[in-house]
Image 1 (tube, rainbow, N blue to C red):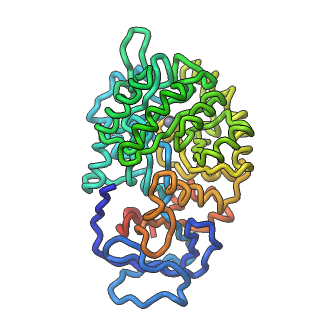
Image 2: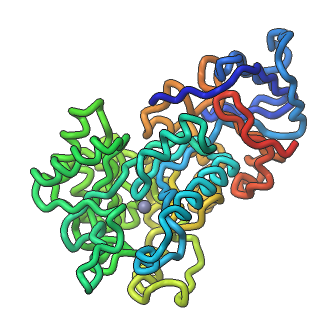
Image 3: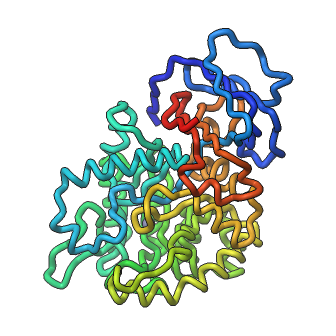
Length: 412
Ligand SMILES: [Zn+2]
C-alpha cells in the first residue's frame, strides 16, 4: 500500500495502561513514543523509556492505550436502511460527501484500517492517501462478483439493475476470471465473491449455493497472479461455506451456518472467519425492511449466535468485521462486545480486532500491535476495556485516535 502520511512531530504518551494487541498482559504506567516518520520508536514500561527532547508529551494517565483497530468487513458507500429502489433516485454527489463523512466517523470510532467488501470505488482510498479527506486506511473490493440471480444480482422486476456500483455478474470460471481482472484493473486490493445467497438479496436464500468451487478457484488463482491479492467469500449457509473453503479463499464472511466439521475444515485451510455479528445482534424493525429480508433475518439470528459461539470455542481464526453499511456506521467496535457475549475473552476480542485482523489484511508486518518499528496507529480509551469491553463500542469513550503518528481525534 502506498500509505504516505504527513507527520513531522514525535509524540510521547505517558501514564496509560498499554494493551499492545499481541495478547500479552497489560503494561501499567506505560510510555509509548512515536517518531517524526509516524512510526513507534518505543512501547513499554515508563521506567525503561528513553529520554526525548523534542517529543510532544500527551498525558494519558487513567486511560488505556491500544493499537488502532480494524474492521475487515464494511461497505462505506452504503446507507444503512436504504432500499435498493431508493438508491436509484439518490444524488451521487451528495452520496460521495456522505461516504467521506462516514469514513471520518469510522476513524473517530477507533478504527484506523478498514477492508471495504463492495460498493466503494478505489478513488476513496486515493483521496485518503492524498490527505483530501480523513478516514481509515482502506482496502477495497470495488464490486462483488456473483452469479446471475444470486446475492450480487440487484436486478429489479423491471429489468433495471438497482446497484450497478456493486454488481459484477459472472457464470463460468472464465467469466469469474475476467470479472476479477476487471476489479483488479479498477484498483481492488481484495476480490469479493459470493458463495451463497444472502439476507438482503431478493432472489435467494442464505442456504442457496452461489459461485461453484471451480468459479471461486478462478478468482483465487487470478488474485494470486496479481500481487497475491486475497479472496473474501460471502458465505452464510453450510454448503457454500464448504465450497468457499475448498476453493482456497482467505476469509469466509458471515459464516452463520458453520458446523463442527466446517470449523475443522477452516482450521485445516488456515482460513479466517469474519462473523459480522452486528447483523445478528441488531434489533429488527419489520417496518424498516422488505418482508423477505425480515423473514430471513429473524430465522437466522439465533442460529448464527450458536454457530459462531461454536467456532470461537473451536479456535478458528476470527477477524473483526461488522458489515457496516448494512448495519450502522461508526459503532464498529461494538462487535467486540458481541464476540465476548458468545464466549470470547475480552483480551482475545481485542487481539481479533487488531493483530488477527492485520494478519487477514496482510498488514501484520507494519500494523496491528503497538511495538517499536510499527506504524503508529494508536487508540486511547477512557477506562479499562478488559473490565468493560463495551467501552470500545462507545465513540465518546474513544478519547484519542492517532494514525501513523498524526492525531486525528483528541477529546483529552
Ligand atoms: Zn457485506
